[in-house]
Picture 1 (spheres, rainbow, N blue to C red):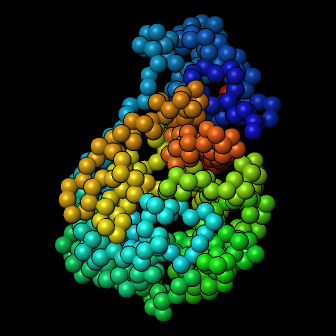
Picture 2 (picture 1 turned 90 degrees about the vertical axis):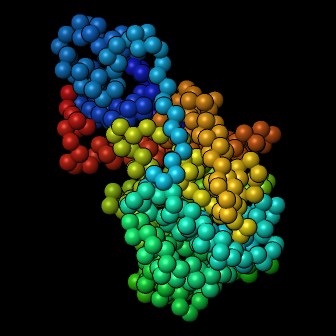
Length: 481
């Protein structure tokens, strides 16, 4: 992978992207206020080389007497320090955020594991049989589901939103329960909390097709996510029924029925060695099926039991980076409905600092299993050290505080010297845990590093250049020198 950071950096967190002979895009990830330099790149680099020796702005102005306004511009964007580090008390670490306070949360995503079993056997299923009850036909009770939503409503501030995500296993195995939950929310909980919103989401393989599914999805504006890894010959190798039976035709028919009913469907492709050579065809297939948006997500190398998948299914990181960038070249309008570009573009917001990439430590994501036990992430279900309690009693937020401390980019050895760390937040914690646990698996460890670092840097680079190329983004970013 290319080195995205120039060696002549004025600050520890400075990213310098070059294009052509004189174009530069400069951003210090601690401040995240990008500066696009259309011409005059060589002059900028000479100033940065001097500033890298910890000279303050006043010294730079004396040395580069014709460039006072330019140096002021670099200071205003956090690219050059106004004072030398010694006078600032040394390095300034990013502040450590705290989990959101109950009663003040603006949004909570609630994953209800209505069933922990599934009717498919995907080759990369996150549900480990030890942590998830995959072999049992357990069903969440309506009582647990109602208590879960009421817990979230109590923790929301006025005007807040709880998104109830029907999850599993396969949630459509409990379609009757889904309707009961929605009915309870519409008839009881919404009238009791008029200052708060309840929204619905369904993550399903859509191989099951309740006759009234399109009606309920449209009436209650349920967002739907379904995994489609490619055309039938690709998809059925990854997402098959027990015994190997194909699933694509069933999912595709349900998708078409929902689309014909006016539903907006997001299709997700998990990137593996099976489809990493044909991601353009996968994207085209999503469009053909009627997807309103597409997600392309690299496979995580292990399940919730911390058991590694066969290395043969891991994609080539260079291939998925190249394919993702090629998909992104369709233009900015298309990227708004294309993950990961829409996700990484959202990270590139001036003044925003990402010290943790995942929302789980903030206490705005709850995963409730059939027993009512609560966890902060679908990958952490069943692990005692991450259990927050049960919906029947008060929650213990100490695991969230410990996660926040452990995941902070200033504390992670792999992130400490990286200029990008405040822009990416260190990537998915699951990848981080997998990399640490894969010390005797060199290929897995390298895969985790490449997908966490190289992939993130490539996507952020594309997002930064999109920001620079976009018209009307303001003189502070499109400044000429």
